[in-house]
Length: 87
Image 1: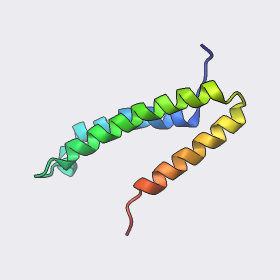
Image 2: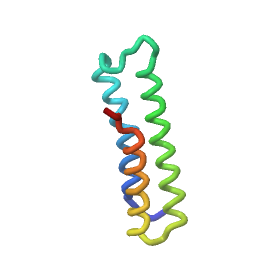
Image 3: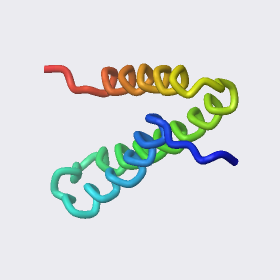
Image 4: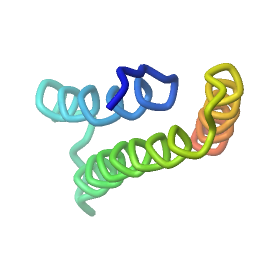
């Protein structure tokens, strides 16, 4: 398999690694009587693995690296826009 680093791969790995670190070191911010912190951690990690799957599928179908990274950046921007809290 070719060596490849894409924007979606980096974003997905960061989701998988950083959120559990926050969960470990800042338990007070995630404590909730309803258990929403644990649910958020689980959903974030699953989203990271789903992002890696999407990255793999896009890598296999799109051969141009520039097009691949642009499409992945649009997907990341859409994901961040949907998850960003509204004020």
